[in-house]
Length: 303
Image 1: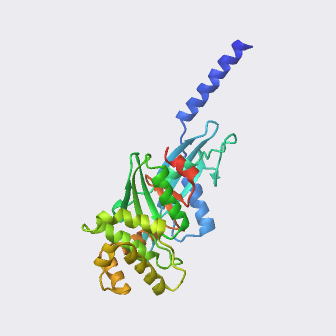
Image 2 (image 1 turned 135 degrees about the vertical axis):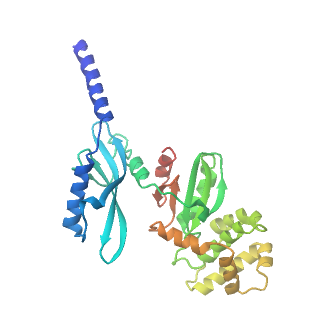
Image 3 (image 1 turned 180 degrees about the vertical axis):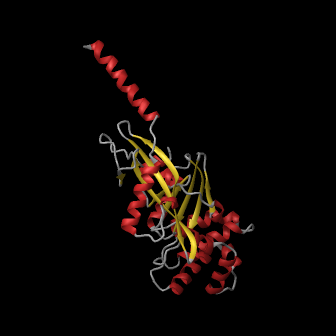
């Protein structure tokens, strides 16, 4: 019995290895199926099969199942408008027959088997110069944090990254996206952006960042002018150099100076362009995590 079992086991492994190495996506069939579904369900005018193309594909080897993470580019044409492009991301099998949604996990340990491929498929090429470098560590991962300084989860991210992960990240860039329901946050974020960009003040950048994420209290008022006034006074009380920099300026004039000497407006627009649904959003070498999920973050550090 032992002599029979071993050769069968070896044969099984060889057969699977051969299948995994030779796995191919039937691109033509996949595009055809997607096209038919778009026509049937979305009723996109003037759409033709040749308007669909595969922009990126990533093989997912699940040992007993061969899947693909696929990004499909859709060229939308209109006789009266400029041509536009859209994208469709999905996970399918070799034959383009099934669509897999949600998470597929290893039943033994719950490990998300599709996560890495999906993160790679949706990876973003970020403009790091848009934000400000708030930390440099000893690791090999670059992080971008889209944050609001009064967001409690952003504050947790700021504190945890510097205390727990300082040896595992190389550079952390913040991009500010102050939320409308947190009045006063835009002024606070503007101070950080301003100080990071002024040569005579950049020595105070870490102090300012620590202050806005650790100490500065969100104003109780929801009136934007009143909130800005409270934040402005908090900075003047905390930092003597800030009072000198904005000496005798009203909060309105100080805000104008902060905006002119920073790129806070560009940061806000850029943050919105990343399809933000809230804060924080963490990008690990361009791979996106919405919200705060430290277990997921740990996995992303290994990708």
